[in-house]
Image: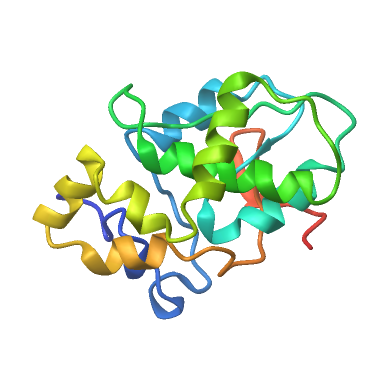
Length: 165
């Protein structure tokens, strides 16, 4: 987008590009999901890339946990759904939870697809990203637990959680 230094491709956020800089990142879907969740006690930001770290942070809370999927343009997305399953799977390694039917279904989808790409490659948004030649971004984003950090949204700012694993 004109006027922006970087796109929303995670591969552009290299150490050289962002070291010692304030980064203002806004996305169509993620930003909306995060800000609409701001009334929650805590808002942790997770993806497949940091699923286990976020799950471990979340299980420390003595309250109900709600996982919000950002989707795409207000619509359900398969990649968010399988990521929810991954988070729930990791949380259940630490503690038992009473799951809703949709949470149990996302867990089943995740556990039934050890090759995550086999599930999401049929998704509409995946195909759009392929058409945009963003295969490298897709390959990067579907790596599980590459990162051990937990971003947390608090008072309008995203910072690393103080309880980083």
